[in-house]
Length: 352
Image (cartoon, rainbow, N blue to C red; front, side, top):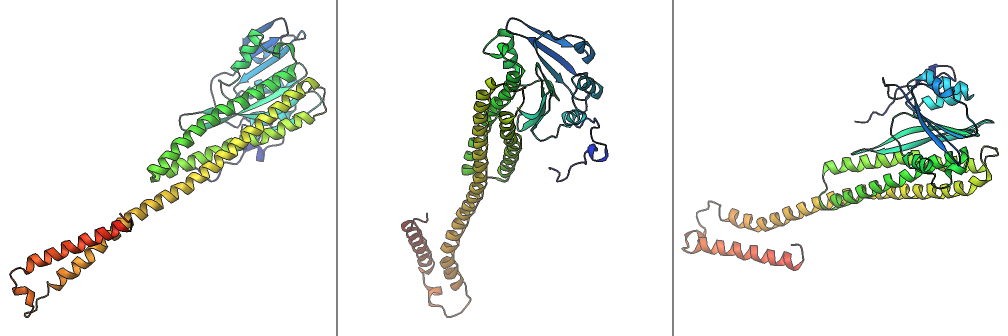
């Protein structure tokens, strides 16, 4: 059962900028990876600590630093100090319940987006925070495993423009990978809606109602993750900063169109699920009407039979038919005629 209330966030009793991890607590170490590349070469490294990563010097390459795990607050604070990330931005990174948004500063852009993971019977939303600088992108994830592997392959194999473009194109590519994953999620969601439609029409039952409400809740969660993305891309298109080059504008416009398509599909699915609820109620009502029709026909047939049997069940002394030799068979014949006549009448009216 879903609780209607949530626990109060620790930030409500803490000063602004206080670094508190709000999310699943872990014991393992965070995973730190670095992609350093230019048009001619690239390096792919994994580090055991933030300090070892920050000892490296960037010789004009584009850096992509990926952090898996947000529970090590000291490591997040160290990387924030090195790249001059404001404490309020770090606070948003550690709070995994943030609404998707983008913020602009003189030295970097910060974006909070949602990455969707399909489970067996549900869809899990994971927060991904991006810091986009002049020559670096830092991505923060709560769990290991993401949808960015195609981006890594493009960097390794020098496919497309990514190795010849700057950090702004890398930031765009990461958001684009998240949006492409939304298409996969929506495709699976569409299959589930089609399966549920057949169940609702053919075999509606109380468990089906729960499936409809669960599906409706998942679509609402997807909607919460997708809708703010349109505002994020719109703000990036209008941002007056040297961090976003003119060459990225066509890609951001294309990404905006993709997000609009995802939103339209989400809204369509939302209406379809609401329609499923109406279909379920109609199917249950029709099923009840069919049962009531059968019971009504049976009752209608037995009303005259009950009358005849009750009439001849009276214990009066002077009833002429009581002493008749063929009286019992005549009553049975009368009952058969009445039942047959009623059945033919119902069939003519197409009630059977």
